[in-house]
Length: 459
Image (cartoon, rainbow, N blue to C red; front, side):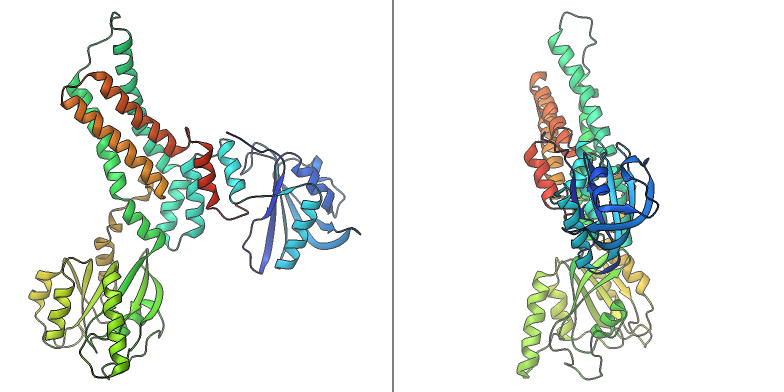
């Protein structure tokens, strides 16, 4: 696999003004390049410093060696750095113009611009992390909530690798036994117990099936879920929206039809990011503007990944409520019986029979919010996730895990169907190959390039 070792550089902090900005330099000659632009206040040379040392001084650049900014240079010596190479990080003031001036000076001193994800790519190629750990870096950066952060951190610490490694080792043991039995029939090798072999294959297949079944729930934590709040007018949809948003996002009045368009907000409910849409009340209306809002609400309902269906506890179910319940058949929905602080007149038993998840809340006071959070986590299956077990993060990972499972299914069918052990061996080796590709231990240049093309420059 092709590997560059020449020094690269990039701005590693966000492309926005901030208090501090960092330019990272990594590779052969990184300390010498930094030494051409950085002058220590004490006159010390970056090239002579041991690792994990910081110096205060100034960065100079341009044809006239103009002082650009004061900075702190932090030195990391190979192999004890993020990339496994010599690394220098120049921390200066975080103005975008300043950072670009410093980066220009570093590039003029001999570094080349880093490509997307090139620092992490070098860390992978230098054995500092496997491919699943490298992919979790971007999940850490993009985490939108505590649960997503814990899941990404577990991946960065090797949870998924350990899970895949355990399955792969079981398959390698099986493959080695099969190969030895087939290649050396005259030697004193114990006869294969086909029942034990079948059980071992099924154990690995079961773990891969469970790993694949958790992918969608993990994606919900990373990317959020399109959620629509629906119900007839005046059941408390906008009050619920404001409760979840933590501010007055939707207008609330006692008049039906106040919400005429879709009001959107992204909120965190527990650890789950919800891309919320508060919609117009579902009813027949002759108001042309409100009618447009109702049509938009129905269209949004058809594409929602999660529905929060709101009903008024203080009044009996209406024809509009029944129509909504019928429309929601088979959809992932939580019934929210609002205004629980008022006398109940709704047919609770009817609601409970038709919805897997239902909660009683007062959107006005906030009572029942914890129960709503638990209901949402249950229906999206995020409550069952254990980040420390390791979960799949990307479509690439899911595809390779799926291929490994398909190979195992083929091996199990071959063994159960009485086919030769050679056929079983081929499928087991195919599963091992897919798992090695998942962790990056047997990945092509094309796969590696594709993975890191999705990274930001500077990471």
